[in-house]
Length: 315
Image 1 (tube, one colour):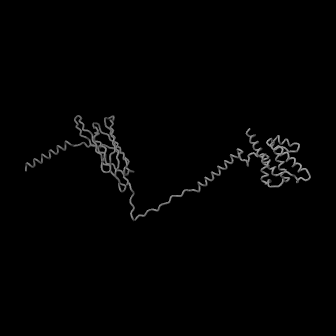
Image 2 (tube, rainbow, N blue to C red):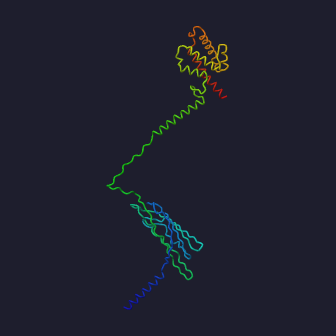
Image 3 (cartoon, rainbow, N blue to C red):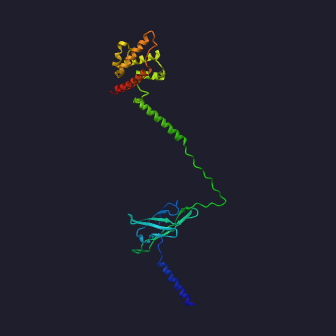
């Protein structure tokens, strides 16, 4: 009996001594962790930054930093970077950057915990103070993990009707295209008119052009012979080309003021004499002036007049 009590007492003493010799300093170290805790799903990368400061006399053990590789079935440590910096007061500042990757998913959004990370310092012997390694714990970090697939529909739920996309407005673009086309045509016609390139609508019509336009509107070409008003209109056109009233003895002024009419000088002179006699003889309506021949030289005079006036403006 006494032998048993002595053995039990000796065991308690040895256990107490062993426990006292292996006690690990667990002084509190303030660890700061920065990590986004939401918006993650299967395959995402998680970055986590942790930092803390060690009091004077402690040296961080870089070998305590976990190695890259699988942590559990759904989490891998892709990369970890540790940096040490000596402060002015001989304290040691430690910063750690972890890169994790998710390989699991959930049925519905929930909070998942990254396991705690245990770090330590090196054992250092100083005068009168044998310091054991200091344990530093980076606590678990929770984050919200979202499911990859949507929730399955049950038989009690019905699909929402498919909303047809709005039809493209075709009327407005067509109307705008037509409007721009019309404006383009009008601008082109205006430019041609300003350049005096429209034969049937000259910008600065001369007397012969105005005469030809008047006779064309009256459809004089369809008549068998000229009326007295037609002859007066032709005389007025010739007078307008010369810039004064014309008489048989002053007809040469016409070809001096309008040299472009000299090509048909003989024809115009014959017309002027015949029409002058028609005006002043007794039987004024009985004349043999050809409508077709007269309209022909008027048309030629119109073209010559336009060319002459165009060349005069350029010079």
